Structures are given as C-alpha cells and as structure tokens.
Length: 199
Length: 378
Image (tube, rainbow over the protein chains, first blue to last red):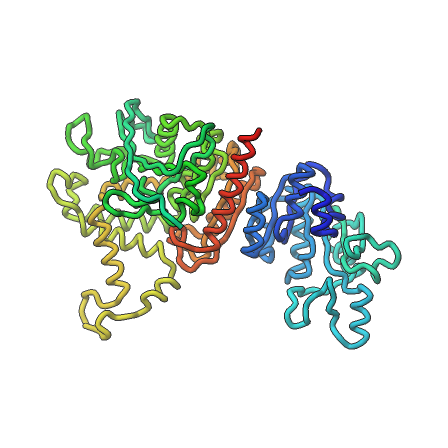
C-alpha cells in the first residue's frame, strides 16, 4: 500500500502516518483491517503488531500479511514488556474502552511514543446537537446513544488533562476534519482529535 | 470442495543410526509418509504436517482401506492448505503404530519385537527424523511446518532446531509445555495400560494378546480432555439410554456409551506401547527448560514467521498456553499472528470444520502462496 492509496482509504491515517519514523517498531491497538500497519510495513520499513478483537478484522490483517494478535485490549498489554515499541498507535479506539486510564498507562509503559486519536465531542455540530437537546449523531459519531460502541466521550481539552495525569507529555495536538488539520478553533472545528505523546 | 482422492503411503528406510535425546541410538528405521500435490521446480512449496497423539501419515485423501485422512477438511485441492499450490507431506513418527518403526517391529538386536525395549523418543527426536526425510526428498526449506496439539509442538521444535529450514511455523491448539494437570491425565492413562494383566510388561506381542481394557480406559480419559464441558453437555447431557435408572453399573448414561464406544474403537487399532511412548513425549516437551524456563531465550534463534491459533473452550491446551508462546515470540520481535477462535468444541476443535478457523488458515496460506510467487520472480 502506498501513501496515495492510504490517503484515499483513510485520510486521517495518512495524516498520522507521517508522525511514525521509518523503521520504527510499532504497536497498533485496535488496528482494524490492518491498512495503517500494512502501509507502515511496506512503505516505511516498520515492524510490529496489530491488536484486534474482531474475527473479521483479524482475517483482513492476515490477508494483508500484517502480524495481528487477537486480544481484548481491556485485558491490558501484558504480552509486551516495557519500552518495547518506538510508537504505540491507538487510533479511534480508546473511546471504546472501559479502562481508558489503565490502558493509557499501559501504552506509556510499552511505548516510547504514543499516537492517540478519538472523536472530538466538542466538534461544533455536536455542541449544536446538545444545545438543541439531542445527543450528537454525525459522520464521526455515527451512532445513536443506545447502540454506540463509544463508551467515553471526550474533548481535546479533556484528554490533555488525562495525558498529563498518566505522565505523558503532549508533543503535538491536532484536530482533523476530513483528514485535514484544522488550525483555527480546532476544538470547535475538528471532528477527530489526534495527539502525539511522549514519556 | 474435492479431496485429494485415493492415496497410498510410501516408506523410506534409513540406515544411518539416529541418536536420541535419551542417549539411546536407533540403528536403522523406516518412516511411512504420504504426499499430496506437486513439488515445484525450486522446491519452495513444501509443507510438512506433523501429527498428534493417535494420528498418522495419512493426513488427507482416502487410503486403500477407505479411511479418510485425519486432516482431510484442512488439506486438499481448494482447501485451506491447497494441494493445487502446495506439496504437502504427512509423516508417521518413530514409535507410532502406523508403519514407521515402532515397538511392534522386530528389534534387529534380539530378533524379537522391541516391545518395552523400544527407546523413549522425544518431540525433538521426531523432528530430527523428519529432517532426514526432508533431506531424502530434497527439501532444504519448507514453506511451512504445521501441526495441532502435539503436532504443533513438533512445528515449534522445528523452528528452534532447524531455524533455516522453514519459512513459516503454524502451531495450533498447542503448548510449549504440559501443565501438571496434563501430565496427571497422561499418567492415569498410562497406569490403566500398565495395570492391564494383558500388558505383560509391554511384551504382549509374544503372548498374542492386547491390553485392550487398559487402552480403552486410556482413550476414555484422553477423550474427556479433548472435549469441552459445554460440548459434552449439549451432545449428551444426562441422557439415559433406556430413559430410566437401572440401579446398576452398566452403561446407563449416553456419555458412558459414547466414551466406551470410543475406547473400544481405539483399542482395536492402537498399540499400547505406542500410547505410553507418545504420552511420555508429550510430558517431556519443554524447550524452555534448558534456558532456565525462559521461553524467550529458547525462541531467540528462530527465524520463521509464526501463526498460532487457540480455541476458547480448549481446556487441555488453553489459550493461555498459546499466549505464553506469543509473548515469547513478540519479545524476540518475531513475525507472529495469533487468533483466539471462539469455538465450542474444546481441544478437538483443531480437527473440526469451523469457518473462522479455516478462513484464517486459508488466508495465511494464500499469503504464503503470494510470497512463493514473488520468490519465483525475484
């Protein structure tokens, strides 16, 4: 997979990929179909693993030749020892976890650097929905309140606090809209929050 | 999907003595094997399938007696391990009772069957013997060595003993070492055989009897560990054959009937000395032991890429066993894919048809096939 293909498939992943240095040993938590890892492996000479719980996604990863380990992330990252990875990616999956804080601490333990993304709850259409008395339903939060897999709702500012609490330093924070960074009023205008963190 | 069809075994005699882990030496021996598919020109498409406790070289297709191979649902044309692409070898291990040299064969030193004198063989010994067969077939490097349960242990041992001779190592429903509970079950099975009056210290061949009752019980206890409690409950529950209690000790519950049938069938074809030997090989397998129990160190020299799979209801070699191997492999930064398949059938699931399981193996072998294509172009 090349950058163009990744950009078309997932613009947000394409943006994030440039934060991962060539040859890095990477752990991708909730790696889905393995598109990101395949790109990092084939184009940036990275190594590493994906963690995924869903059978069909594990199968998709295997088809791509991505090393995937089927596991429930709620059980932690006990498979990996401290500082194993140059970068730990947790893209659009942290908000589905029950134990967000514990997982974030584990991410900090196994990785030298972390890249975390999640839907920004403070995106203006979400604020508008709440003002009109409804839970937000949008392209980035495409679920009703009763069927959403997103257990945690956070804004860019909220996550900064937690990152600091678990001892991670925010080195970059970007809000993406349709895969492109938003510089003016990011906590209003970006639907996806992306953090680059280091210990 | 079709089968590989009619197959016939081949045998390969070896004159060069094989030095065993125990220090004993087997002077000469024969290995029975079957092959399916065609070895390609650069011999890059060979897959070795290692068998578990009671299986044999007859992995796929239908033999002269009409028996279907033990992994026929996995291996064949268009099947997950596609014999239109891969050259698959099934080999019967030393000490087994399906044609390769075993305790029922004549010991050249005495002119009588080996019986109890057949040396205790280990997983590593089997792998060394398999490597010689590979030499004979001209296979320098396997595309994959694969197996389930005890067969998975052999695949794992291959990755450590002959790291350059396999590109992929497929280990299903297996473990890097037995637990105390596993060994305990094995010993109960062995005691049943050893205590059978027809066992005659392992020399029952000369008495023209078979320790059938011992073998029956051994198989019954083994079989219990292959099934999950859920599966057994669903299949048999507390069903009574006659619908009411007989207030005796005959076969009343359906599960009793099933297990005795399995035991009876098994005792009619399996050799008691082989059962002892193979369960001991299971007990002894512990490649981390020479490294102070550190599996990471034991696997440090491996070069293969790994596929591991376990089944959620397998309590014989539970998912934890596979996760321990995965942990050791990722510590060594090896390529490893691991699937935990939610199947109800317990340990036996590795032999059964399950879409998620077979799709996974198929997808992995598809990828292997693409690699072989790329090698060809390189």
